[in-house]
Each structure stands twice: as C-alpha cells, then as structure tokens.
Length: 185
Image 1 (cartoon, one colour):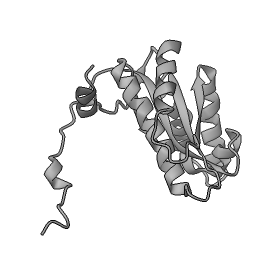
Image 2 (tube, one colour; image 1 turned 60 degrees about the vertical axis):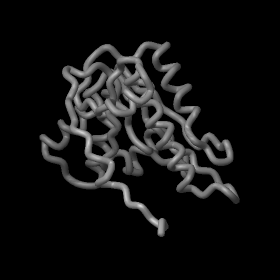
Image 3 (cartoon, rainbow, N blue to C red; image 1 turned 30 degrees about the horizontal axis):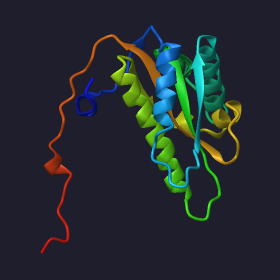
Image 4 (cartoon, one colour; image 1 turned 90 degrees about the vertical axis):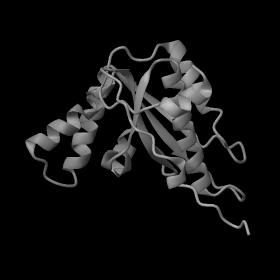
C-alpha cells in the first residue's frame, strides 16, 4: 500500500475478530513504533501484549478497579469484563517518563503517542485492523498498578488488533476547516 493512500484511508475498526496479528506482523508494528520522533532518543515507551486468557484477566482487572471506586450495576460490570474481548489481541502503550533537562514529560508523552500511531499505521498497511481506545481504565491507578507500571509510567492507550467485520467509510473533513495562515503580511 502506498504511504499516502495509507495515511488518507486508515480508519478505526471498533469490532474486531480473529485472526490476531502474526508474529511477523507484530515485529513490523514494534519496529514502526521504534521509529517515532524522539527528542533525545530516550525511547520513553514500552508495550504490553495481551492475548488469549490474558484478555479475560484484564477484564477482571477492569471490574476490580472500577468496583473499588463505585458500586457497579450488572450491566457496567459485564461491559468492563467484556471490553478486552472486543479483539483477539491488545497492546497497552505505556509512556515511561524520564527526568531530562532538555526533554519535558509532555514531549515524552507525545513520543509514546506517536509510537502508538505508528503501530496502528503499520497494522493497517499489513491488512490488520485496529482501534486505539483509552477511557477511564487507561487512567485508573489500580489498573496501572495491576499491569505493573512504575510511578513514572502512564498508559497512553489500548490498541485493539484483529480483523474488522466490515470497514467503515469515514468522510474526511476539508483541511481548510483546520488551517489558518498567520504572519504573512
């Protein structure tokens, strides 16, 4: 697939089925992530790969984390438990923030986000569908603890990977809606 075609046609796929990416496809996703813009070459990210029964365990982590903060209805509990089962594989993108005199944390978070985006693009280029999700569980301290994140780490998002039941057609806005010229006199 041509790079420009990829950039202009990639869409998020909310419902994903088997198959999960192959080891060869995953290798390309990870290698693409490692090419993200990275001021200071800090590599301020890491990834957790969750598949198989790990998805059920993650659903249980979500339920435990949310129920520690509030009483859950049966429907809420079921939704949290089922969330990781919406795809055959998930990648948790983690920003590993480092103290650095020239690279503030915000730049490191952006680098981790760029790594996640590169992974999604590499997936789409290989015929693997994806969606980047965040939500309350990405920011929950109990989820962070149960996934083994350190104090200096934060979840950037959950990338769900698989094959879409059908591809959505999403209209593209016109660039003029988002671009302003400045400083030209």
